[in-house]
Image (cartoon, rainbow, N blue to C red; front, side, top):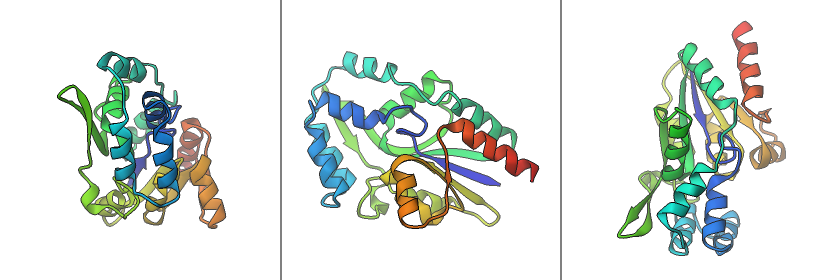
Length: 213
């Protein structure tokens, strides 16, 4: 059985929703914290805590922003194909559940299991929580490698689908890697075998080939 672990930002969603959100509503102040994270000077929990503290946003602005975000038009078909083959699809993200769940709900996919960080309103302000930080790798607030390790059972084939640096920790746990953008560059640089994709139509094609082989 395939167990599919899929990144959200820039993979399921057409845009990097979290990056756009924190850039827009901190007036660009979040970028310096993102740069520190990329340089390995802070982990993503610290990056988020600093960024959330800089947010200036109303509830109306938040929902307006979320409602403007779109997902890969082929992702819904990919999920249905996996379900037809009894393959499990989970979303693993170092982003925030607030926008992930809202966007999935709008696309009738809110039944999918999501493992992510949490963002919520408290006393009129947005606060962040990190339910999986206990198992952090030291770089991620929500380490994807941890989730792949804890759900692997004998006979499973783990598939990772991602596009960015937050997916790197899960590479060594996956049997098959679908990658694009920064994750594909990382795989190429480190001579890690992967399947490059542009969108979920490419992944559907690969699944069809496997089912025929």
